[in-house]
Picture 1 (tube, helix red, strand yellow):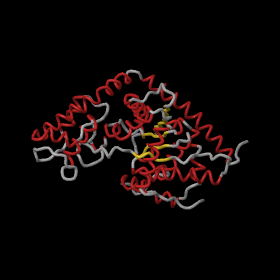
Picture 2 (cartoon, helix red, strand yellow):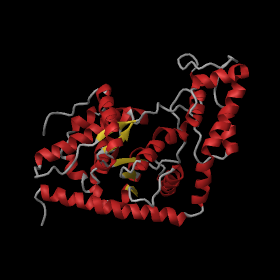
Picture 3 (cartoon, one colour):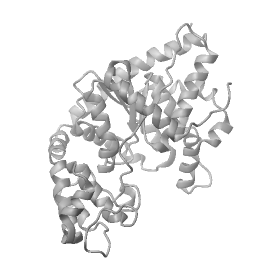
Picture 4 (cartoon, rainbow, N blue to C red):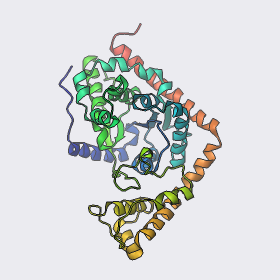
Length: 359
């Protein structure tokens, strides 16, 4: 086993991501994007602005885009397994409503649990990392701390290796991530490198996938303090109606000062609502604040409600149509499963060849 995993600085990762972005625009055919979600619930506007829109952008650039619905990973730290099937289908509805077209060849959506070839990579991958390296992974440590549990199951502990199998089974080369996911991706890169070094082939079996860092800042919830999350009751869900959206925004936090200004450091709640308007309209948040002025929190919330409902109207219309066609959603998933199994099977065949296990 080569030197221990080295986690690079955020600044270095940002620079690599910038160069990757430039080359993606020029040569989209060279790359393969792997991204995904855990089906723990329906998506909200934080997902839309934070990741979904970027997936649609890459897809529209004709970059081959693979989206894994990581259903097995729900079992690592959630007890809501009774909702996994429904949540999986709802994710697909949100993906399509947001602009991903499963009829095009450069999109593949598949659930992890239906691709057994992917899971067969876990055993050789686990031999390429040590317990101490998993112990030191900062993202896993934070997730364990956040769970509030004294002990965690081995599935949660080995989560980064599961993620490596997700990515490398289809030999993904680009992984859109936020800053907090960089340590996980570094483990994937290390596993790919160690496999190629240990089991030498004429051509390396695995690429070392690169991080494409999100340009969208952390989307805060309507409380203005924490990351948007359904569990914190501070989210606008993509499936909410216009009236439900209005009711949620009405309860959003502002402050006691009537005159609206854009001051993220000192007026976080107000700045957050201005940022949400900006994401919907493209207008500078400071200019929005100047326009509202003495209109106060009431006018601020009114503007956000109108902007949000206008922005989400086409997506919600498409969602309503897709909800009526569950068989189409299932067909999208099974089409993705067939493709993912074929590609993961080809990868597994290469792995067996490299490890001298072919019979």
